[in-house]
Amino acid sequence: MQREGGIDGPQPASMYRRTAAEIADSGLAWARPDRALFAAGACHVLALRMIERFPDLGFSVHYMRPTNSDRGHHLFASDGITAFDFNGYSEAQLLRAVNIAALRSEQPNWQGRFEALDLDLPSFCTRFSHRLPAQFPGDVIRRADRYIDQLTATSSG
Image (cartoon, rainbow, N blue to C red; front, side, top):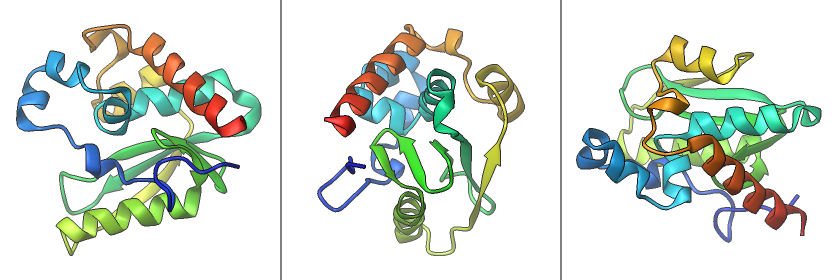
């Protein structure tokens, strides 16, 4: 498995957190590069689309949920050993550690949990109040598919 993200491994999703203006204006958020969009704002689409497209990988969605903060939500696909998110493939344990360390550097008392969920995209969005694909200003499924294709081609080549 080839690591993506940075030279030393994956980058934390919090590096790409949306600004207040991007949260208020979905068009501004949509205009960000793919990496930023799928790190923060559409990580749920990317993770669940990866699982849907490649069921033989045995991935499920893993939800990083803060327990004492509003910040720190992130979704990725994983089989418990390997993870896939905006970074591409990485070691699941390392991806968790990088995200926790980054959040704790901003919020020293940050606490959260990782939940493996068995939900499709519409069910996840409904249950956890995330945007459905139709609520994005463009075709987020097509954009996620293109990004997945780029990341998986890089990781396998």
